[in-house]
Length: 241
Length: 241
DNA sequence: GTCATCACAATTGTATACGATATACGCTGC
DNA sequence: GCAGCGTATATCGTATACAATTGTGATGAC
Image (cartoon, rainbow over all chains, first blue to last red; front, side, top):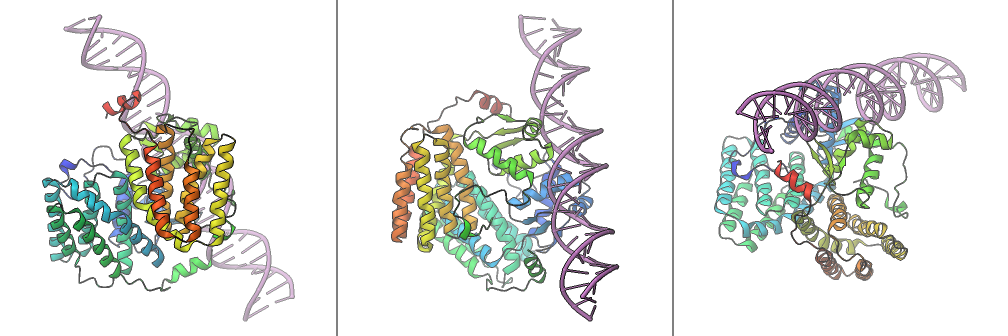
């Protein structure tokens, strides 16, 4: 969604405070990035009053923002209890990557067929930025860029509906990775992205599909998804329901 | 999500007014069914005041409901203009069915592997109800049940994430069908569903996958998706943006 | 007669106020 | 000392009130 004009998508992020942004969207982005960058931990409570006070808006707009985040599964809304940053379970984590495995490989295939020179350049710049972020140790940013790479592919495939789903899944993946990532150092992702780009450059849809499939599999296996109930407050909540 | 206990899911629908349903959800369901049954036409404006007055709630809850519907792409929210019932374009219609083609066949495959006797019975009852609705000429209800059939399969596959996506896509499909359906009489769907059920009964995942794929293709080709700009107000809106 | 400008009306965006609900604490009774 | 229960508080759910923006119609100049 957020159908940003492709032409001026050179700046990878910071969609610019367009003109009249409804305050709600601002809060959504602030909270979303805070969650993605793991600055607020999964399970943490997001009190409406508190958030509103921090960002200088009323509860009305905070509520709207939290609802949107709940739709993206970044927060859980509990009736009369409040909003809590999502704590994806192991099962949910698997399901998210299952869904990605269903959508992304064939979307990559489609993208390969429609790929233009400017698309390739844009993807390349994504990778470059990702490398740069990694070089300076900013894994959070690298992770974010890595996600944008996937979303960009879906957009190139000219499948807005699927792209929206993928965007949602990537967002959740970000949270999942923050929770279950086990080898932070070996961020081999950028390599996989590079290989994908090569397939795209050759217009080799079949190979792109294969690369994407294995890339997602790699991602999944790099997570530590052993069952573990080590989240104390979640246990308490679980018992109280 | 909405992890309803599978055991007491015998009643196909009407999730029962649980205990304390937040008024918003009630409005969402009312409006959603009104849209699905085509009682309010695509493009129609949904004034907050008006809707609130009709259902006896304040604008606050109406706004929340409209936001939710917007997330499902059943209504379009235009800044400072209001909410309008979505008018899926031909392109969007194709994209929705593209997405379904990506998700549902393999989900059907997974479902076949996990299918239990009670699942089969439930699907059968869906089909029966669908037939009954068709017999009494209630195509709207039949269409709705037909959608639930697909959602139930995704649920059986035990893929909540994918099931949610499919639910969204089925919902949009309902709107699309209302707009682009060309041969209302020949609702051959129930036949396709029956064939699917047979594959499930045999535990033949491969065949289920194939059946689902062709079923979705049938559905798509039964739509009249020739380009046509016959929607005057949509043209006006398009120019004004 | 046509076009631009301005003011008004209608509707949404946001803030605040009130009522409902769930959790937590303290009290009484055993 | 501990279990059961009532109240107290904090937070959410909803309604209402105000501000901002947009669309429309009238008025006037060219």
